[in-house]
Image 1 (cartoon, rainbow, N blue to C red):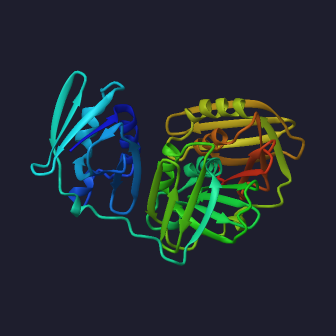
Image 2: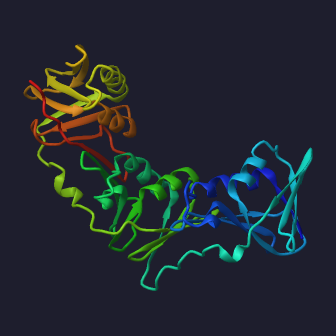
Image 3: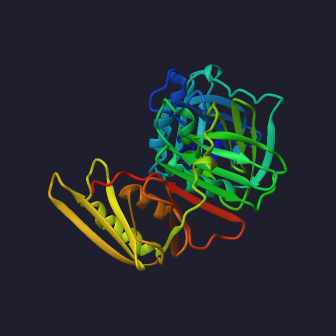
Length: 373
């Protein structure tokens, strides 16, 4: 059988699907894409055994149906430098040979039996389904992904907690040292439920999800499914009870400073060079509309100090923070200025935008570090 497809359209879908695949698979067949040609399109499936990415590309022409598996690295590397043009593929079901032709050349590869390729498990009947704008999910992922943990012992902290309420959706991420809570009130789901989105799934969605579309989310106690215009993503949820993220956020913070965000980021990056490279400890001191940042490493006798103008009129206070973590937080927050709220040197610091967008609320929390002085 023969089929013709756009080279760039096919390669872009293969590149998106490949993000699900693992470098080491328990089943050799999972090193392959599953191609299913029928109804005027080619449906491509990629998987690592737990996650399944299914997408399709319309065909320019085809004369029959076919199904086969092909090594992902081989097909992608062979197409990487092919310019936009119609690609003609001829598949021989008896010899399992796939031949590809383009304007300047031809290549031939052997395919594998598609019957051994595993299929995604369907979600149970007791599932929850809702539709939300893709922008809402993307913003939640962008806000929270950096704060998720990597500790396999505390598995629930390796994902983004999606807390769905009747009047809003809250996204939370934490690794125990920093925490992010993002609330979007523009969506009214009308239900009360929650799930934990795995970190790798969130990273895939960040790269492949298009803005300004509507996506469908379905999930039960174990599995999830995200349906977008150009792909379907099946995955296992992170199982477990997510910690009470609201309970660790201090509510009474009498020490409040507002500072220019870009200036703070620049100063923190300069200070980070002189902080202890293992701890990243930095001293933040507030007094008389001044923010003083100090970083030092006694092992190498290095020290740096930065002074920034800020809006601060309370009593003097000093607190220790990880300079690297504070840079990450400042980079994630939108707006020209941010506000740092403190209770005392032993309690977490809260960082928020100086002006919150309509129907949105972003809050970052950073655990303090013990100062040497």
